[in-house]
Length: 393
Image (tube, rainbow, N blue to C red; front, top):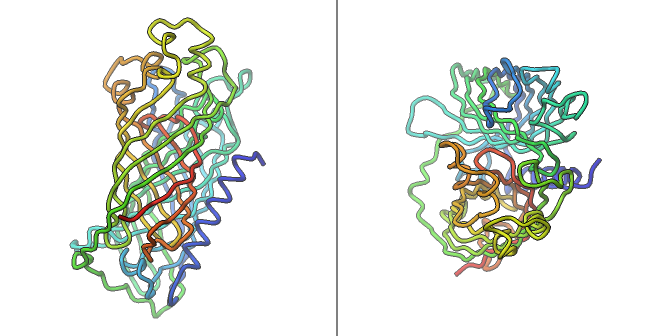
């Protein structure tokens, strides 16, 4: 197994175990869920994207309803945590083959003022595709090129039928698979999916937990944030002649924000990134407008807006980034339409943080390590690992 894949699996397993065993008093209910999903891949390149039909997936989920006395269980209105195993196709077996995925997940109760029950599920794991890019045998697959890829899924469910032991749900969701540009071609796969699922509980005594109104809590703790990242990026065919070479991406982040009710982190700040591939290309070639200042033009300055959900030693981390300065990328990915313009302006970062100290105890200083997928508006950019610190003010 490749080294980067082993690191990803380590993060996922450690994060899952940290959540499961970080409990104060367990009175949890177990469930098994079978799910059928159908949908369609959303092309992120309308000029060179493989043809595909309906996408169909069968998923099996095992999980725990955290009906316990822990602070995070109460705050998130008794979430579900578990693991998903799925098998499916992407609508073109010759090009994409079959997909097998394994994802830890967490499910939150949302829209608590509604009489109907709605749940939001977030999963982060890994996928295997049986068919990948091959210059001779599968040249049209510019979407998936590596054996394993990240698999990120979000879905909104609505309960249709509820009994003591069974829940029937309809859902709609979004899925993204990518190797984070560590091997090209890798445009990434984005899918819109609809599902129907049946959830079976292990106890006839199961009772739906009472919803909790968290508006009564108003604690807000201010903090400053420092993060140093190290990523892996492979230059694609648009950015230079040297492909199939992985080079580092260095990131430094400074920010500030608030931790709301001990469980939700909201922050903003600045990030500086340096792409080694960009620098090498600029210094090796005479690129008009870039070669005079190679270090500067191989850089990226951005403003980020962050949200993170704390679950003891684990944090689910999401960034929306606004690129203030990214000259190399803009030079080789010029603005042609609305999508390409937005791709120059916006990027995202999604991942998992593991904290040294329990986040709910609000330590004065907390240190974490993290793993993330970075994208240019849905198109993979690079995979990143980082170490960071939160300093309470």
